[in-house]
Length: 587
Image (cartoon, rainbow, N blue to C red; front, top):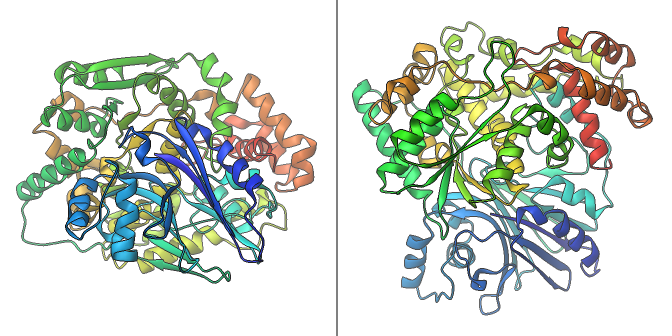
């Protein structure tokens, strides 16, 4: 896990080393162990390293192979790299390192873009070909690793984070109207290629991009997820097959030169990871749980369940209690760590949890993705009988309708209901026939990527911690897409996953209510947080930016508790977070 960046020029100029260094420096937390720069003629690559697969200097990046005429910067983890190395050795390729980086480089030389289809894992990387002068950039199938870029007639730049590109300067930082509409409609999910600023795009998951030395660019899809439910299997057979797929996904993510722990919330998903890791014979691995102060009848932790699981499987368990004063004090730090503005309350929790975990562990497995892949959210069961799938989904997930959006933003940004158009098109293009599968396809390939997965990547990498997500193993996700939707959405959601879990987990963990950690100060804004948001939204920077209508902002400030989204978020916090993020990035 690392931070990567680079530049290729089209105007006959040499690479901008100052910009390259600025981008690399801004991502030091993603790779605190080491760094490197490669520059020749019109190309520059830089890398920040977090040692996980190979602890030696032999996997240092940028990795340059003069014999093959290739230079690589790579972020991620290829779990089947030992098998690929053996296959490449049989083809005559020598190896000097034990990590996955050299495997990526030589796999590309051997198989070109087809190598992507062989990789099992998470990745974003760029390879420069000396002979052709071409730059090849790629992103993993489910977007677990990020890849942002900016381009104009003079050059193409890329980086693991949007702020890294901003730090290099010389790009359009005006607000993208399409992205703003998605941000305020689609629960802060901004689908690629858009980002909140016009000058930065992001590569879509499951795609690669070629950039020629004359500036010509082409983006190609190499993977897509198709929902094609299979008939002829009963529930018992599905449950057994699912458990085997899960075991394989967890086993793949144990490949590392360091110990791998688990972020254990106490819910079914993370508890299942603990049980399956214990099955693999891992003795006394570390688990981590976080809790906050309780508010009224709402518990601020799930230690009752995480303790049960840790005791059952004999883990070295760490309970981390975060007082609200500390959480709110570090809120600005969590905002600065965001590659894009994210409204989820989980961000600050993941940020502080990662800080503590990184003190004793460098890689963890995490349960993100289970709800999106196995229909765990409350809007999936109603989709089964939805006469209008789009409208059923919109009412559950969208933060505001278009009429309210027009009252929220100024005339320059109230041009079109882009988010609704996007979701309608996604539903139509998914090839799924079941309404629930249409929602699952959208959430797995879009919402998941630009909300939970991005949140985990940003907050863990802020502390140099690698998060691995077995529920987003592409083979597991493809398998889940062959299941009948009814098996996933039954009994309130995630039925088949819970039934599979019964073979390895205690019933108390499986049949408990779904947990949710509220951060009341971000839902019902009061005190210092409310004053900070008020100052941001009414200050000169926001006024000059001209995004929001003052009368709408005033309404939210007058009664912040009354303006809550269907997903239990604060509409005022959504506006304040965006403005605070823009100011934190000096945009």
